[in-house]
Structures are given as C-alpha cells and as structure tokens.
Image (tube, rainbow, N blue to C red; front, side, top):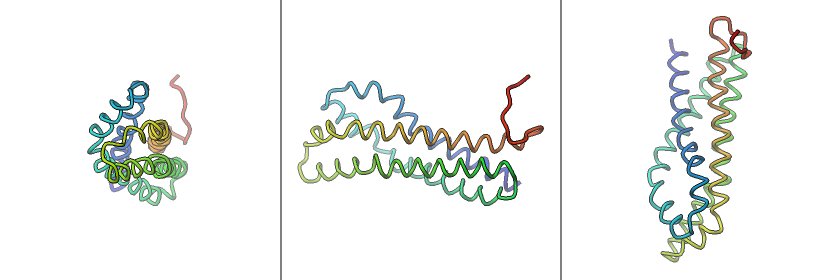
Length: 166
C-alpha cells in the first residue's frame, strides 16, 4: 500500500511540475515575436506565482522520486525506470539552475539598481530564458514518462518492456 501511495504522489507532483514547463513551451513561439516592451510586461506579471508553486511541485517530485528509487530498489525493471525518472527530474532542475535562474537573478538585480531598465536586459537574455525552460520541459517529460513506464512494467504481463497492443 505504501508503494502505491508513494508512486501516486510522485506521479502527481511530477505531472504538476511538468505543467509549469509545458506552459512555457506552449507560449514560446508567440512570446519570441513580442516586442521587448510587451515581452517585459508579460514576463514581469504573468509568472508571479510560478516560483513559489513551481518550487513545491519540482522539489516535491524530485524528493518523492528519490524516495521511490529506494522503495523499489529490489524490483527490476521498475528500479531502473524509476532511477531514470528521478535522474531526469534532477537534471531538469539542474537545467533550470544553470540556464534560467541566472537570467532571473540578473533581471532582479537590474531592476533593483535601475528601475525600468529591464527591457534592454530581457532583449539580450530572452532566448536563454525561453529555451532554458524548453530544455527543462524535455527533461521533465522524460522523467515523468520513465516513472510511468516503471509502473507499467509491473502491471499484469509486464516484463519491463513496452509492447504495442496486438
């Protein structure tokens, strides 16, 4: 019972974390065409709660996935898929730390020093911020998928491989 609850919680948090980066990817093509002033206005208002809520989802999914790795350590192939999923979630967070967070910090520092000067900085850093989120999305989707496959691999008739229906 504990394993089922933990798997559910892990999948739920991973899915919710995935919604954050999925939103960025869906917005990317349109936002890349915005003029700098409008882009700055949108980014300065639209993502206000992403940091708080996203942190809970993202860190929660990583923590629960790592605990899940421990819980399934003796269950092959679920262990391998779970480990892959947890690793991808960790890598997604790492990509955010390396690609996106520095942009956020630079924008905050510029706004602190010279209020109203963010558009020039956003113009320079926009691709890194947008494509950094896209990279995180790919890693989070891979992590979520691996976690789902770990569960499927243990369903009736599952032997750790995915097969097309007959």
